[in-house]
Image (tube, rainbow, N blue to C red; front, side, top):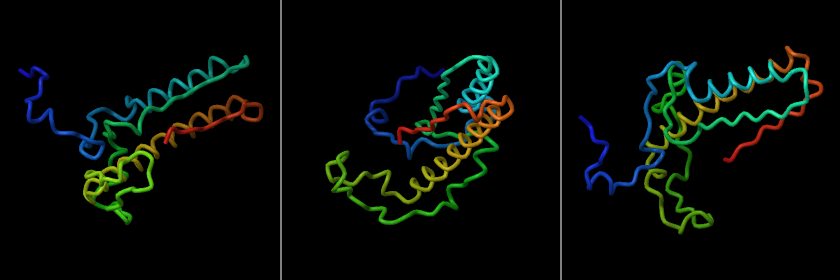
Length: 152
């Protein structure tokens, strides 16, 4: 039985986005992105006859970066390019102290991050497309302002 308590040695280890990857054992229609997207489409159906503001906030691209199938098979880590300079100390970045950030300097970990990022962007893009299609189907596109923003 697992207690959920990590041994001290393991808890001292700092995990990053690059360390947390894999395939989510959940059908694609139940991912956070799919549920959010479906809720957006359903909200348009309910709100179509009135003025409305609709926010669809897609959580992923945040850790854990674990896409489900068939999305995971779209981009495989081993086939991802690693752009240079991978060893950039980011001296000019306001977010670092000029020190190298180990996970982001490891080509194998960077491949996972790039693959998973591409997979999630593709999944979100598909759901945004379904929302836009629903606007068209309901005859709302010409009188609706759509704003797409990202925190990254």
